[in-house]
Amino acid sequence: KPVSYLRAWLTSQANVTTLLGGGLAAAIASFPAGIVGMAGALVVLGTVQVLAALVVPDLPSFRSKVDRQTRRAAIDARRAQLQHELFGLHGGLERVSGMEKWQKYQVIVERANVLYRIASEANSQLSYDDAERVDKASVDYLALWLAEVTIKERLRNGEEATLDRRLREAQNALDAVDETDQRYKLLKMAHDDYAAIKHRHDKLAARRMSIEAALVSLPDQVEEIYQIVVASPYSSSLGSKLGESLSRLQLEEDIELELSQNDLDSHYFKTGAQG
Image 1 (spheres, rainbow, N blue to C red):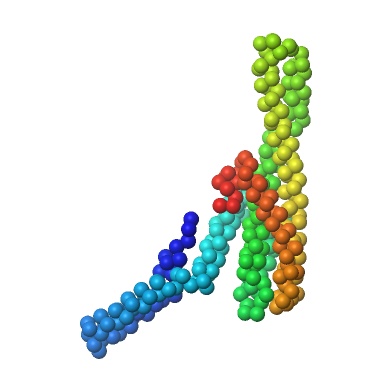
Image 2: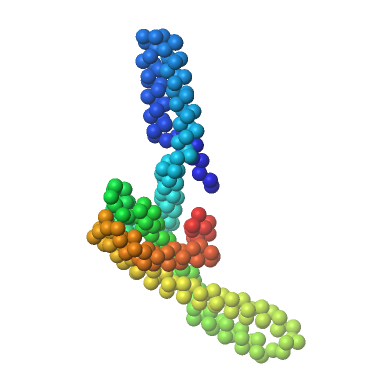
């Protein structure tokens, strides 16, 4: 959905404050000058409002601020959706808060908040976008966690040994009849169905391994980025030092995108993880 910079300005705290201040000034002006004084003050306020609406929404600094707020809101919306699903699967916040993964997630969130503060400092060499990537990593961690839980449940339902046995039985039955036999078509359909299920099962098992590895590596990657920034937040070489570490975070984002393109039993992934 496109961002309306004009609407962002009209509803901004600065504009609301201007309107309230102008209204108060008009009210004060009405005491010594009556209705004429109030009308004059309101004309000035209206002129300022029109000029501001024509200029402010096109300012690069204002647009950058609005874009950041919009992205931050999207990150928080993803976070809330993921937490809602995880709490539902694990029996609420009370149970989740005692889990090791939740503790690791909280550390990532704390690191991201510190990096946001550092990025806002005047002489900091850390960009807001880089701090934002770490914040997104905290949400990616929740998405990977949700995917792990979902895939575990799917694999449990799949019963690998049962699938292998049924596939062998279907193959044996298929081998035992001639292609001209009326049963052949039905047996072939059964065999192909079991083969497709087994293929999806094997893909899920491989995906689960990659997710488990990402859940271990992502907190370490965030910690590495955090330590680099804290050690030299004002260094001109900070960007080059962070380059490789930030690129590794992209790998986890790629895993989540790939998950969103598969049929996992999760509202989050079914509705598009990157939305």
